[in-house]
Length: 148
View (cartoon, rainbow, N blue to C red):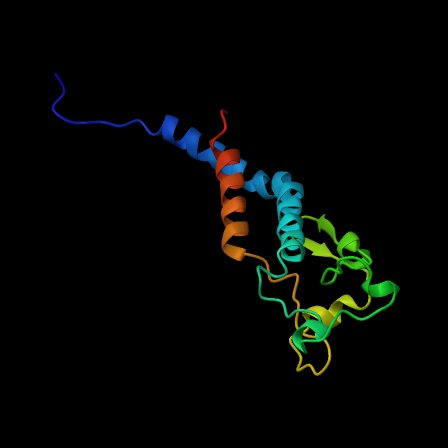
């Protein structure tokens, strides 16, 4: 009968090393999925009109009828009439960053925090950060907890 308690740390050290290695690899392995998740949330901003925060069209704000002309046919959508901007949004990643970018030159006018006189702020990059971070945390935890 032993007169003391003893713990052997070899197994614990092995488990810690496994999790360290998983953590080291996780971001590189998860970067494509994280970029796709970010893209989803950016596109959700378009679909929900900034989760209901975007200013409506000028003619709606002024209480006027919809203008005539090709641009206003059908049911015009904020920032989606031509779909050029929404369709240009592209998820990207490398070893150090995950992003969604666009090469449409006028996009900056919609997201810029600068004072504005004509174009209302419709920042499609102002995603639901809490939801996005929750998705990323879930991805990381799933990766770390998978069987060795």
